[in-house]
Image (tube, rainbow, N blue to C red; front, side, top):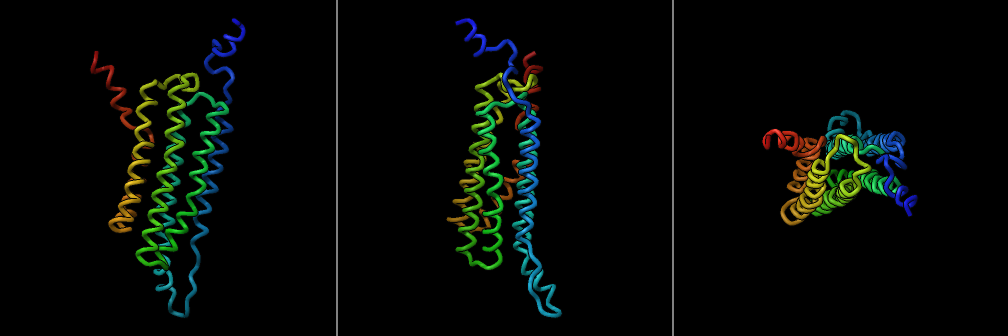
Length: 228
């Protein structure tokens, strides 16, 4: 009984955990591939003599979709980089949750291509569908991040030594915000106008970029000094 108890609760909190090095290397490779695949939707347009300028202008919507998604993948990479600094090691469950995060990342080129096609060749209804697809894909992408933070909060042995319970708990606000506001952005694009939805998507990407190092981290650091 005592031996079994020692296996479940080892004296070293990091015992039995895998190093994050391989996880980080694998994730970086996935992000690099995804961000490279985005450029495949850009193409040299067909044009007649003297019409290159107009042909390039016609591809501007595709370039816009590429830029938005390039920045989005970059923001996700920054967030993921900060995420891995919260953990001292990984286990099987955390690896599966991380794979769910990567599944959302690798799906980005598809709604990007749909959005580019709608901006270039579609009408308002097509653009509405494309914006809703992009926004809802982004909303669903927030779910595994929420699961990751929740799992890390419930398993303190996985957390890095400098990371407190409150620091992990407060980060759950960000994926919850993503789930709710990306979803509302999709509804806005459908019910009001797709351009409003597209603007909402861009604003949410900016939000995740600004908070890539975490939310309220400064407030948590100042809290003890205020009480003292």
